[in-house]
Structure formats: C-alpha cells, structure tokens
Image 1: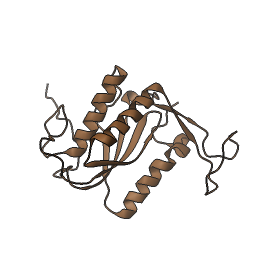
Image 2: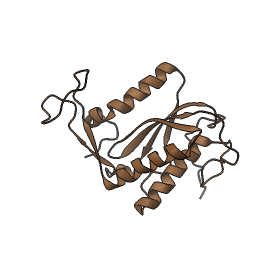
Image 3: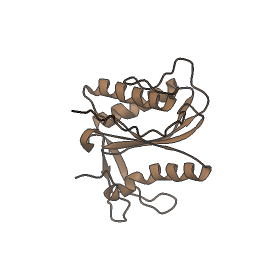
Image 4: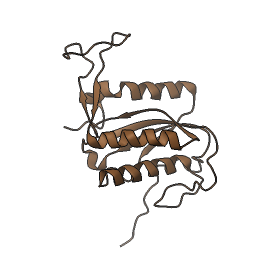
Length: 181
C-alpha cells in the first residue's frame, strides 16, 4: 500500500515569518460546537438587544468554558509574542478567526510548528501550533483539527475586509459555512 503525502495548504515558497498581516481560521475537530453559543442574529426581534451606532442589531457570542480557555490563551499570547500582534479575533461555536500582524522578523530559534519541521522560519505556524498545544493541554483533550486555513493579507482593503468579516461573523452565523446544528 502506497502512503500518500499530506498536501500542505501553506503557500509554497512563502516565508511565514515575513512582516505583514494574516487571516487565520482554525476549526474544532469534527466541527463540534464546543467553543461558544451565538445569541441573536442581528434581526430586530431579538429581545433585549440594542442596536449599535449604525442601527445594526448585534448577535452576542457567549463563550463556553472551552471558549474561555481559548480567549484567555489568546490574551496571554498577546502579552508574550512581541513580534505578533493579534489585531482581532472571534471565537465562534466551532472555529475561530484571527487577524494577526507580524511586526518584524521572529526572534532567533523560532523554528515553526512543533510536529513537523517547517521549511522556513515560520512565525505564524509556530504561533498557531502554540495556541493549539496550550489550549488542548488546559482543556484536557484535543480540541482542534490538525491543520488550519490562512490567507495572506495583500492590501489595506483586504485587511479591512477581513477585519469586518471577523466583527460581523456572529451576525452571519446561521449562513456560515461552518454552521452545524
């Protein structure tokens, strides 16, 4: 039996330690909804909800205990990673979105993911690997799918579109591609 090599979803020959912004999506194993609950959906008839300054009614993300572990870990990592700025994030029921900015070259010794050697000095994969590893340890079980999706932000417009996507994601949960009942 011939073993197939797993296809990488990283951009070939791209150095993930380059300064710039990255949009990351990390999914829960088997897309189980264990991170949060979305209350309301941005429609006018949600009891007790008020609109923001734009008149848009906001859906609310209520974190589970596992979601709180992830939020706490992200806040810890905000303090720890001097060269990676967590611009924005949202913890959805079965996935998270992050908007990360790599401010400068990573410190010496940042060698990429923990499971497999990386061909580049890959700060973003290292960051994601640490987030997964620490949250799994604190939760007491493996939360995450093996890989994750990344998008390299290519312009200011691209940045603001992805930031807006993160901010509005809870309101669009019912239409989200990861929405499972």
